Length: 215
Ligand SMILES: C[S@@+](CC[C@H](N)C(=O)[O-])C[C@H]1O[C@@H](n2cnc3c(N)ncnc32)[C@H](O)[C@@H]1O
Image (cartoon, rainbow, N blue to C red):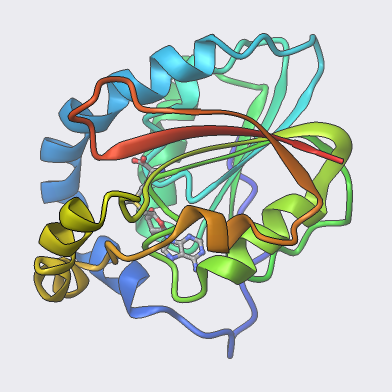
């Protein structure tokens, strides 16, 4: 059920990145799922979620990850773009997913209480928001101690040669709405988390799959 009751504050900043996705929903819907959906589904289903676990997905977009969550957990998806959320809501209604709701919200300032989710996820979003460090801090803040943070994203390569090559495309990708220079270790530094695993699905993948425990 769509719970659109709480709009982001009227004067909250609207990062240009979200406007980008708002304007390009049709193209995004056609191209992106083929690239990313399989990665989300396989890695999410490997996490064994307890019945009635509370899950938050930040930057849920059109909801292509939503069928990976078991129906006995309670999922809230948030995103700044209401047009993306409208697509997610169509999916939710079509599938009668009463365990899932979506709400418009800024990832950098979650309107949610501390320490209430067993799992906080985010896919391909942290390099899109204006302030990734704020988003990460917020994800950790709302996660229960002992709960997990699960992120799939591109991060800057630790191989200086690869990093340099990818950096050279940074101007273009920033025009497309995402940055390529996000350094994972800097982003996670000093947060109250322990990294449980971090891998790529294959050596050529641009995306890292990160699981961390909130301490
Ligand atoms: C690349 S899309 C990823 C969407 C989805 N997670 C997926 O994998 O298909 C990035 C998403 O971040 C959202 N976004 C951008 N800035 C945001 C912000 N400040 N707060 C919440 N969502 C934001 C966009 O609206 C978009 O849905």
